[in-house]
Amino acid sequence: MTDKCVNCGTTRFPLPARNLCSRCYPLVLKKESAQEWDMSQPDTLAKCDIPTVDPVRFSELKGAYLEIIEDRLDIFRFRETFINGGADVDGITIERQLLRIAEKAGAKDAVTLTHGWKGRIDDSMDANARSCLYGMLCMVEEEMEKPWKGLHLGELFEHVRQSTELEKAQQRAEEPL
Image (cartoon, rainbow, N blue to C red; front, side, top):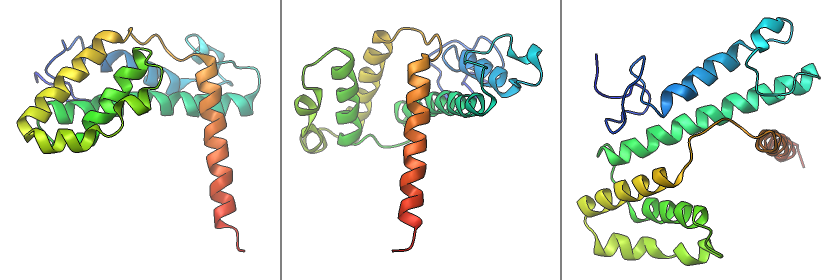
């Protein structure tokens, strides 16, 4: 048995089951459940969080749902890599973390507020201090967050729309002139 989460590597949260922390475990369960969703097998849709009217749309939404869950799990891995000293924290990483906190706190112009701190942070803090500050900022953000209850349909549809637009842009870029 390990004392670290097998997904994100954290030691900061309890491991309720399967060597996954209390942040990752519910997401892994949602991901595993979603992977089983199949419109041709209604019993697999008992815990389905997305509309099941149109098979094509259902497939798109299911794919987006799984991508978003995997993105959240990736964010946990990314943060813990820095917090656990597995990567050097630089000024831009801290600047981006400050931006996320400012946005969540409702700053009127979070981008302008946090832009330009990278250089000051890199010039005035050593690697240890940057790592410590990043860890504290992550903890502040974690305290601001409500437990994830799943996706809002609007977020899911927006993810599909953006993916479709990206695919179209990539196809246009590949077309000969």
